[in-house]
Image (cartoon, rainbow, N blue to C red; front, side, top):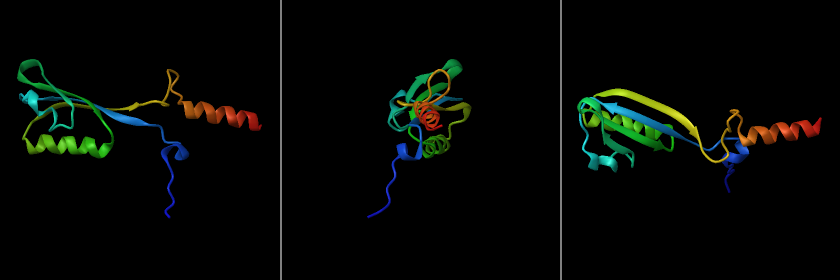
Length: 108
């Protein structure tokens, strides 16, 4: 028996990594599967724009390695952490943070 702790117990907010990449050359639109299901679309001036969400940072690094393997020059790379269900609301506080604050207030 191992000691298993889920993300909720650790207070980890469910999230993904939204990526947006523009390459210097055209990428064939049929390569969506090669890029982990990210959307490949034609961009301005003969470039391609690749967008979507990846589950974790190793997947982001893997994406960068794929560009290297294809010898594609990356002109622009944006990676942004986005919260999924139970993530921060418009105030920037997560549901978990609000529940913790409320519980703490009741203790005092």
